[in-house]
Image (tube, rainbow, N blue to C red; front, top):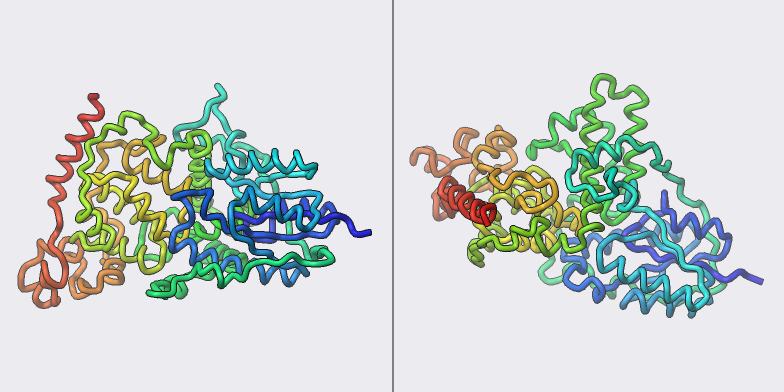
Length: 483
């Protein structure tokens, strides 16, 4: 007699390698039924945005291919997860349901209810950690409180020796006698049709587990040894580009940590170990963001520093739209926003620059920027997105001082010294030299004419004066501080 199957619910863990829930199901020896549920209801406004949905389609197709090669199928169902999963478990006569944990507040609430409901029905229900190095409740201060400053959090993580080694993918998965019906992936219409704006995404990314491993390998081979030196240069291909793969769980942080550690231990980075440590710190910044989201579930909506709830924002749809479309008149800001729209991703230095400009130059609420990033980033991640926006806005944990206002001209000159990044994404300025490309309004009229630049026509005049905007922002922040 065939054993009752185990239902494996895939979520943000779209891989076979180092997948604890899948490994636990394999250990049972029972038939395995993998399922993915498209649940746009439970997350509310935090359902995947446009760019993330494009990525999800490709990633699910890749996962289905991997499962097929292992002798299994990916069943696709749509609806509320806490309704779909019990119904499917009953349909296939499952004895156990397993999944890897998600840490968004709505996901924690749903999974808590679901686990209790499944156990009431007599099923085993177990969850595992596939997304983080450490559970958010496992790294606390000596007094047992959550960390609010990154550096001591990094040190606490670095000094722990209990990071599990990643486990290999199962070669074969036991199949049930009959497969349940499921949706066709194309019927979900996750990819844009009219207009099809995703050409840049297709040209840039290869979603899926294989693409994640290839990207990690290329980074470790060519860029890890100069990561600390080059990571702030958007004109260089210097970062890992792993963030969307990590968000969707096509690769896990244990795999990245282990592979990086192996390069250090092998001696390949002799004398340059600090380059790799800087990269690991970025991996732990992601960890810190999840730590904050778990302990402060209001993080995506409300400032962690409650005083900032009274900040006098000057909400203005015209200003917000100019920022969204890369038409602010500040070349480094516009380059970042256009890169975001074209490939669904933006260099981290640019994320800080454009966020500072929106919040502190334009005095638009950080939640407006957070929402735009949510819809346009292929790596849109609730923890990273909200924690990072609050950090730049000066209202989050261990936040950048509120009085730090990035000067977009100086940032451009420092991190795009030859202007190559701006030329790529703001081609109407490509004729300007490095001396003028970050501040075209200060260029001589003859220089602009020779470059084919007509300010206010081919490229906008600056929408605000940065010095005046900085004074206005600091005045507003002082009001909050004094309140």
